[in-house]
Length: 422
Image (tube, rainbow, N blue to C red; front, side):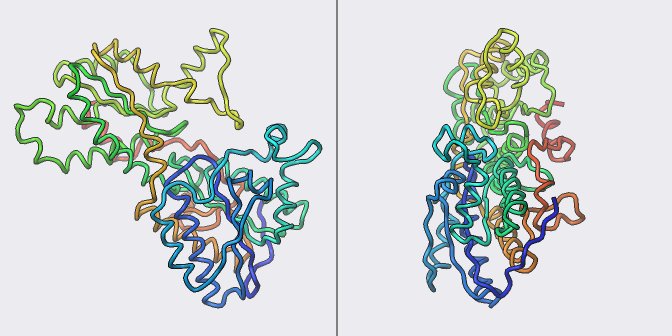
């Protein structure tokens, strides 16, 4: 639905923010950059006054009215810079689906007979909010779209909803690069740079590095790329081939398994067995969603209940692809010891890097401009369907999750060739 509300130029603006969904290295920085962008608009005279309100714990705080206002003074812009170096969210997150009425009632966020969308709308109206910034992934922003449509239909669009696209999976249509994904890849590489030393802890060691990514292999592929960059920078360490576990061959990535790539476990097992015989170890990077369909099918065929969350997603922690792979691959490669290490929480809880802070800043500035000058709601991001990928308020009805990783990209194809996987 294409929407345009009343522009805010020349008025006092009450701005609210909330962070929602899983963590990503951008939540704190998004708040910092949005505060700075709004303060700049005030300083430049685009608006006459400004109030900041923050809802605790995502949509939960919005439903329960749990919030606070942030005092504005001459020191705020300087103080808020500290959030650029902070991981996590300073106001907390939750996973709440506004359209899942029974779940919201069960958790005490609204009462019997109430609808979460109306409760949220009434809270925004009570707090006299003009602009709501929802900072989260595809679930958060599809909920923001529902709320935006509801406000337009039932309450004459009195609140402009501006989303900020957070997800380390980089799997949101039609956004070229989501906040936090590049930082998470760097952090996952740093994580594995230490874990790979375990290759020397036991004969015939199999290391399985599990990266986050339910449906998209982006983070797994990007993490492997960043790790191999770090490995290449350590060439001085590889001058003594007499030390077998200090070689590049032993510490390289030997396989990259992602949901989009058809996995022939028998063929991969044979290929990796040869590497194990030569190097004494095998290092596999795999996405947490890899093989899930096959595992779910196996559970269903045996009459087992498939665990799911409030959004209907398979609960990956309970399905456990890592355990499945460790059992079957260990046998195939003849591993004497298997180690499964997950970098997800380490990577997603980091502070945003310079790349992401810059991207967030661009989106914050454009989001504030869009709200002030045109009153257009949407999710900020680089619109990959438009020439040059301009940063703009992308129409909410175009925002969708589960965008697959583009395996045809040259850097990914080249990496697969270099590690012998194709």
